[in-house]
Amino acid sequence: MILLIENNSQSAELIGSYLSSHHVEVDYAFNGIAGYEFASKNKYEVIIINNRIPKLDSLMLCHRIRNELFISTPIIFLGENDDVQDKVAAFRSGADDFIVKPLANEELHCRIQALVLRGPRRDIGKQTVANIEIDYNLRTVTCNDTTVKLHFLQMNILKVLVQHYPNTVSRRMLEQEIWGEESPASAPLRTHIYRLRIALEKPFQQPVIDTVYGQGYHLAHPF
Image 1: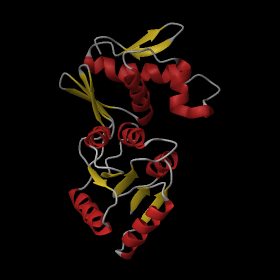
Image 2 (image 1 turned 90 degrees about the horizontal axis):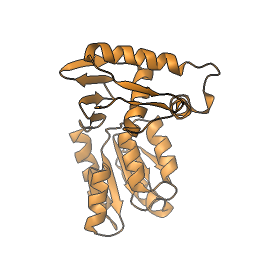
Image 3 (image 1 turned 180 degrees about the vertical axis):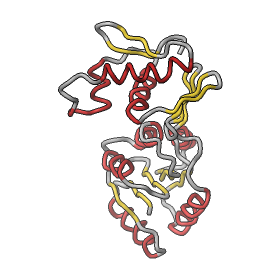
Image 4 (image 1 turned 180 degrees about the horizontal axis):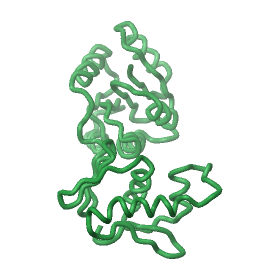
Protein backbone atom coordinates (compact mmCIF):
# COMPACT_ATOMS: atom_id res chain seq x y z
CA MET A 1 0.00 0.00 0.00
CA ILE A 2 1.31 3.47 -0.93
CA LEU A 3 0.02 6.97 -0.24
CA LEU A 4 -0.11 9.35 -3.22
CA ILE A 5 -0.45 13.03 -2.25
CA GLU A 6 -1.14 14.76 -5.56
CA ASN A 7 -3.40 17.77 -6.18
CA ASN A 8 -3.57 17.19 -9.96
CA SER A 9 -6.43 14.72 -10.32
CA GLN A 10 -5.46 13.72 -13.87
CA SER A 11 -1.88 12.98 -12.84
CA ALA A 12 -3.07 11.10 -9.75
CA GLU A 13 -5.43 8.99 -11.87
CA LEU A 14 -2.68 8.10 -14.39
CA ILE A 15 -0.18 7.16 -11.69
CA GLY A 16 -2.77 5.28 -9.67
CA SER A 17 -4.08 3.32 -12.64
CA TYR A 18 -0.59 2.23 -13.65
CA LEU A 19 0.36 1.16 -10.13
CA SER A 20 -2.96 -0.63 -9.61
CA SER A 21 -2.36 -2.56 -12.82
CA HIS A 22 0.90 -3.76 -11.24
CA HIS A 23 -0.87 -4.89 -8.06
CA VAL A 24 0.08 -1.85 -5.97
CA GLU A 25 -2.73 -0.53 -3.74
CA VAL A 26 -2.99 3.26 -3.63
CA ASP A 27 -4.57 5.72 -1.19
CA TYR A 28 -5.13 9.24 -2.55
CA ALA A 29 -4.88 12.62 -0.82
CA PHE A 30 -5.29 15.87 -2.77
CA ASN A 31 -3.74 18.34 -0.33
CA GLY A 32 -1.17 18.41 2.46
CA ILE A 33 -3.61 18.40 5.37
CA ALA A 34 -5.40 15.32 4.03
CA GLY A 35 -2.03 13.69 3.37
CA TYR A 36 -0.96 14.29 6.97
CA GLU A 37 -4.19 12.72 8.25
CA PHE A 38 -3.77 9.65 6.04
CA ALA A 39 -0.13 9.24 7.09
CA SER A 40 -1.02 9.52 10.78
CA LYS A 41 -3.76 6.88 10.64
CA ASN A 42 -2.46 4.28 8.18
CA LYS A 43 0.71 2.30 7.54
CA TYR A 44 2.27 2.62 4.08
CA GLU A 45 5.27 1.12 2.33
CA VAL A 46 6.01 4.34 0.41
CA ILE A 47 4.62 7.89 0.47
CA ILE A 48 4.67 10.00 -2.72
CA ILE A 49 4.33 13.79 -2.39
CA ASN A 50 3.83 16.31 -5.21
CA ASN A 51 6.17 19.24 -4.59
CA ARG A 52 3.36 21.78 -5.19
CA ILE A 53 0.44 20.58 -3.05
CA PRO A 54 -1.94 23.12 -1.42
CA LYS A 55 -3.06 23.80 2.19
CA LEU A 56 0.06 22.33 3.82
CA ASP A 57 3.13 22.67 1.60
CA SER A 58 5.16 19.61 0.70
CA LEU A 59 8.29 20.52 2.68
CA MET A 60 6.38 21.21 5.89
CA LEU A 61 4.30 18.07 5.38
CA CYS A 62 7.42 15.92 4.99
CA HIS A 63 9.05 17.57 8.01
CA ARG A 64 5.96 16.94 10.15
CA ILE A 65 5.71 13.32 9.02
CA ARG A 66 9.32 12.79 10.11
CA ASN A 67 9.48 14.94 13.24
CA GLU A 68 5.95 14.87 14.66
CA LEU A 69 4.64 11.48 13.60
CA PHE A 70 8.13 9.88 13.55
CA ILE A 71 7.16 7.87 10.48
CA SER A 72 10.12 6.08 8.88
CA THR A 73 8.32 5.18 5.64
CA PRO A 74 10.36 6.06 2.50
CA ILE A 75 9.16 9.28 0.83
CA ILE A 76 9.38 10.18 -2.87
CA PHE A 77 8.99 13.81 -4.01
CA LEU A 78 7.57 14.63 -7.46
CA GLY A 79 9.06 17.92 -8.66
CA GLU A 80 7.80 20.27 -11.37
CA ASN A 81 11.30 21.12 -12.61
CA ASP A 82 14.87 19.93 -12.34
CA ASP A 83 15.89 22.56 -9.78
CA VAL A 84 18.78 21.69 -7.49
CA GLN A 85 17.47 23.87 -4.65
CA ASP A 86 14.09 22.09 -4.74
CA LYS A 87 15.86 18.75 -4.51
CA VAL A 88 18.12 19.86 -1.65
CA ALA A 89 15.13 21.26 0.28
CA ALA A 90 13.19 18.03 -0.22
CA PHE A 91 16.01 15.82 1.02
CA ARG A 92 16.64 18.09 4.01
CA SER A 93 12.97 17.88 4.97
CA GLY A 94 13.20 14.08 5.02
CA ALA A 95 12.66 12.81 1.47
CA ASP A 96 14.42 9.69 0.18
CA ASP A 97 14.03 10.24 -3.57
CA PHE A 98 13.12 13.01 -6.02
CA ILE A 99 11.64 12.48 -9.49
CA VAL A 100 11.10 15.29 -11.99
CA LYS A 101 7.81 15.50 -13.90
CA PRO A 102 6.78 14.49 -16.49
CA LEU A 103 7.70 11.07 -15.18
CA ALA A 104 7.67 7.61 -16.68
CA ASN A 105 5.33 5.45 -14.62
CA GLU A 106 7.58 2.46 -15.17
CA GLU A 107 10.48 4.34 -13.57
CA LEU A 108 8.29 5.42 -10.64
CA HIS A 109 7.23 1.81 -10.11
CA CYS A 110 10.86 0.66 -10.12
CA ARG A 111 11.86 3.33 -7.60
CA ILE A 112 8.95 2.35 -5.36
CA GLN A 113 10.08 -1.27 -5.48
CA ALA A 114 13.67 -0.28 -4.65
CA LEU A 115 12.55 1.72 -1.61
CA VAL A 116 10.26 -1.08 -0.43
CA LEU A 117 13.17 -3.51 -0.60
CA ARG A 118 15.37 -1.06 1.31
CA GLY A 119 12.73 -0.80 4.02
CA PRO A 120 11.95 1.92 6.60
CA ARG A 121 14.62 4.40 7.59
CA ARG A 122 16.47 3.74 10.84
CA ASP A 123 17.29 7.35 11.71
CA ILE A 124 13.76 8.63 12.24
CA GLY A 125 12.44 9.20 15.74
CA LYS A 126 15.83 9.90 17.33
CA GLN A 127 16.89 13.27 18.67
CA THR A 128 19.76 14.69 20.71
CA VAL A 129 19.22 17.78 22.85
CA ALA A 130 22.26 19.03 24.76
CA ASN A 131 23.40 15.95 26.70
CA ILE A 132 20.30 13.76 26.41
CA GLU A 133 19.49 11.33 23.60
CA ILE A 134 15.84 10.50 22.91
CA ASP A 135 14.41 7.61 20.92
CA TYR A 136 10.72 8.36 20.49
CA ASN A 137 9.93 4.99 18.93
CA LEU A 138 11.49 3.02 21.81
CA ARG A 139 10.38 5.69 24.33
CA THR A 140 13.87 5.82 25.85
CA VAL A 141 15.95 8.70 27.18
CA THR A 142 19.72 8.31 27.60
CA CYS A 143 22.08 10.55 29.56
CA ASN A 144 25.69 9.74 30.50
CA ASP A 145 25.29 6.08 29.47
CA THR A 146 22.15 5.68 31.61
CA THR A 147 18.94 4.80 29.76
CA VAL A 148 15.39 5.21 31.07
CA LYS A 149 12.22 3.94 29.40
CA LEU A 150 9.17 6.21 29.70
CA HIS A 151 5.42 5.67 29.52
CA PHE A 152 3.56 7.08 26.49
CA LEU A 153 2.24 10.17 28.29
CA GLN A 154 5.61 10.93 29.86
CA MET A 155 7.26 10.76 26.44
CA ASN A 156 4.59 13.04 24.96
CA ILE A 157 5.27 15.66 27.63
CA LEU A 158 9.03 15.42 27.10
CA LYS A 159 8.58 15.70 23.33
CA VAL A 160 6.73 19.02 23.67
CA LEU A 161 9.38 20.40 26.02
CA VAL A 162 12.13 19.32 23.64
CA GLN A 163 10.39 20.87 20.62
CA HIS A 164 10.31 24.24 22.38
CA TYR A 165 13.72 24.03 24.12
CA PRO A 166 15.12 26.28 25.54
CA ASN A 167 11.86 28.26 25.73
CA THR A 168 9.22 27.90 28.43
CA VAL A 169 6.05 26.01 27.54
CA SER A 170 2.86 27.19 29.22
CA ARG A 171 0.68 24.75 31.09
CA ARG A 172 -2.17 25.48 28.68
CA MET A 173 0.00 24.71 25.65
CA LEU A 174 1.19 21.43 27.17
CA GLU A 175 -2.39 20.40 27.93
CA GLN A 176 -3.51 21.19 24.36
CA GLU A 177 -0.57 19.34 22.83
CA ILE A 178 -1.22 16.25 24.94
CA TRP A 179 -5.00 16.12 25.27
CA GLY A 180 -6.18 18.54 22.57
CA GLU A 181 -9.34 20.51 23.25
CA GLU A 182 -10.55 17.66 25.46
CA SER A 183 -8.24 18.66 28.31
CA PRO A 184 -9.39 17.07 31.60
CA ALA A 185 -11.42 19.29 33.88
CA SER A 186 -9.10 18.38 36.73
CA ALA A 187 -5.39 19.27 36.69
CA PRO A 188 -3.43 16.04 36.15
CA LEU A 189 -0.58 17.75 34.28
CA ARG A 190 1.21 18.66 37.50
CA THR A 191 1.09 15.02 38.61
CA HIS A 192 2.46 13.78 35.28
CA ILE A 193 5.25 16.38 35.34
CA TYR A 194 6.14 15.21 38.86
CA ARG A 195 6.24 11.56 37.73
CA LEU A 196 8.38 12.48 34.71
CA ARG A 197 10.81 14.29 36.99
CA ILE A 198 11.06 11.27 39.27
CA ALA A 199 11.56 8.94 36.30
CA LEU A 200 14.49 10.98 34.93
CA GLU A 201 16.15 12.97 37.68
CA LYS A 202 16.94 10.12 40.07
CA PRO A 203 18.79 7.91 37.52
CA PHE A 204 20.42 10.92 35.80
CA GLN A 205 21.29 12.58 39.12
CA GLN A 206 20.57 16.06 37.84
CA PRO A 207 17.54 18.35 37.31
CA VAL A 208 15.67 17.77 34.05
CA ILE A 209 12.56 19.96 34.18
CA ASP A 210 12.30 23.44 35.70
CA THR A 211 9.04 25.07 36.77
CA VAL A 212 8.75 28.76 35.86
CA TYR A 213 6.11 29.94 38.30
CA GLY A 214 3.19 31.65 36.61
CA GLN A 215 4.51 30.72 33.15
CA GLY A 216 5.00 26.96 32.71
CA TYR A 217 7.86 24.49 32.31
CA HIS A 218 11.08 24.09 30.37
CA LEU A 219 13.99 21.68 30.20
CA ALA A 220 16.54 22.54 32.84
CA HIS A 221 19.85 24.02 31.77
CA PRO A 222 22.37 22.76 30.73
CA PHE A 223 19.79 20.55 29.03
